[in-house]
Image 1 (cartoon, rainbow, N blue to C red):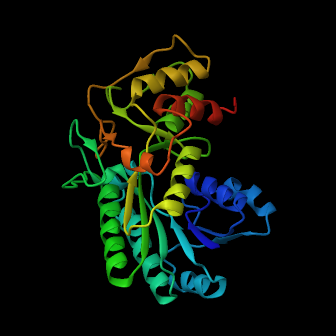
Image 2: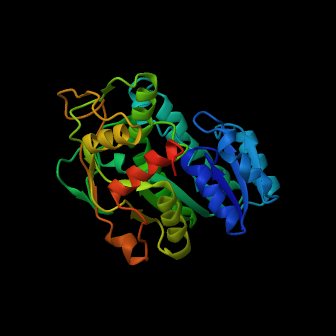
Image 3: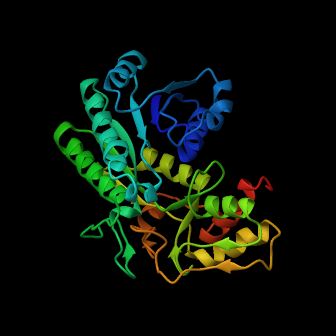
Amino acid sequence: MKILVTGGAGFIGSHLCESLIERGQEVWCVDNLYLGSEENIRHCGNSDRFHFEKFDMLDTARLNSLFKQSDIDTVFHLAANSDIQQGSVNHEIDLKLTFLTTYEVLQAMRRHKVSRIFFSSSSAIFGDTGKNKFHEDFGPARPCSLYGAAKLAAEAYLSVFAKMFGFQVWILRFPNVVGERSTHGVVHDFIRRLKENPARLEVLGNGLQRKPYLYVKDLVQAILLIVEKAKDSPAIYHAAGEGLTTVREIAEMVVDEMGLKGIPVLYQSANGGWVGDVPFYQYDNSKIADLGFKPKYNSTEAVRVAIQKTLGKK
């Protein structure tokens, strides 16, 4: 197969490119390097089945040229602004990088008669609902971040393209994903802060936020399983490690793995960490389990492994 991975030099995209190459696929990776890095994919260049193109997905001339020249038959669309906090500072970033990139990819696919697309969505589409467990048909969706709103709008467009143009659409709503090469998120942020000041750790929120985490290589396994086995369109799935992990537990693990036990960890009084943060959610994983998905690590194990990998200990 000839595959396009948008956002392929990013945290998750680079791991996906690796797995696709290992499976013998020919991969075109496109990334504007806003959050991605050429270092993440440098080793992929050892394969003659890997091609890297640096440009923005909103550059429609370059995008259409790529489709015309490469004979792509499947798209894995991961390009987005994945740093949710940035949406509360720059109110256009999710419109452009999360929604409009999806729209332009869909239009290019339609023009060039490519009809298979995997889309990386998010639990952020649901918003803050309290104690509910999210299943695939949970609703109504009421996002509380611009990132969540952009992902929800993109899902709607994908659904229309599936029905109107016969696209095969696979959607996986990511949980909190952790692992090496991450550029933001709680594990990355705690390690960065402690490297800057190992005498104390300041935490956004009260630390009682509880969420499911998934190790990045387990996530890639889920992505490929869905594309291989799910036949309905749009096919919508959730995946996460079993159980929930609190921010306090993550802080304790980071401090422990960095050999800094005994330092003060300072919490705030707010439930959430920032405007648009969802302090609690939980996934119903039964639908993807029926496909045969079983992650190697549960939520807390995934966090521990991610910390160790980020620190170069494992």
